[in-house]
Length: 238
Image (cartoon, rainbow, N blue to C red; front, side, top):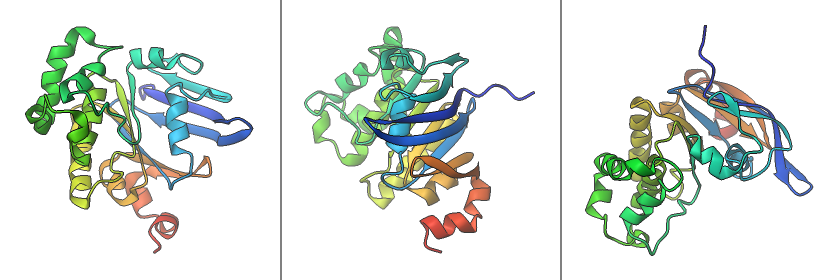
């Protein structure tokens, strides 16, 4: 019998004020999975991330993580459970050092393992070790994205949500970033990758969901979606 999913979202509706953004979202991420939510700007990707993370309240539906219902919980409690969201735009603290930014990631969870986890992050991102005492605002865009992900890893996540990690990076750095995400997953970390970059996302994920106007219009294995003429027509102009 298949194991229960680590994250299960059922019939999720959410929005802002009178505007409903998400309209009946169903999504699953299993232990060790790497799953993508793909869509254009305005499709509802960030709202989905914020709803799962408890920042935007669910109006309807159910969100379960690691065997328990989490909708309605405070974001801090969701972080403590091991669901970590690395937001779009990196959101680092530019006037603090790289090391201090990393340490903030363990404020709510894994504080006793802070030094050990910092060494693990430095081993994974050697450039951050080289710049440990440097102000985070002086890092390049790619290094800032490494720092944002590294800060998430400091909390020993069971699942990490990566919101647009390739945004604003050069093609070479995008390739490097996707390789790092794949490596994280191969080490056993479950990843929910939320992206506009359809082609490279489908190269590394197991399954994907296609989001349009707050609803999933397509889902399946990465191989099936890569072969889909509907997907090629909608996203690749083919």
